Picture 1 (cartoon, rainbow, N blue to C red):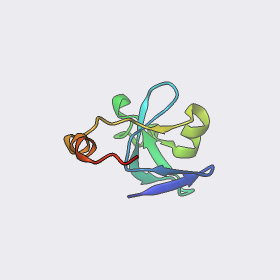
Picture 2: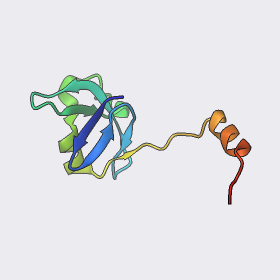
Picture 3: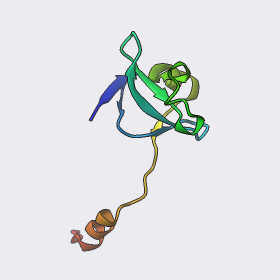
Length: 88
């Protein structure tokens, strides 16, 4: 798991993040010269276009806060919840 600490917040670079406008961003796998992760918006095709990438700090400043994009619950999670004993 790759993480990046910015402004006191630890970002998991392995997951997609959503900005305040609803755009999803993901880490491109690269860093800029300052060592900041470069983020792209897959629906805009920018993950493939190197010049369209934005550093995570700039993205956070312009479109933050960023939250991990909610994912659908898996069958394993449903099974775990339904079979785990409830303790009072």
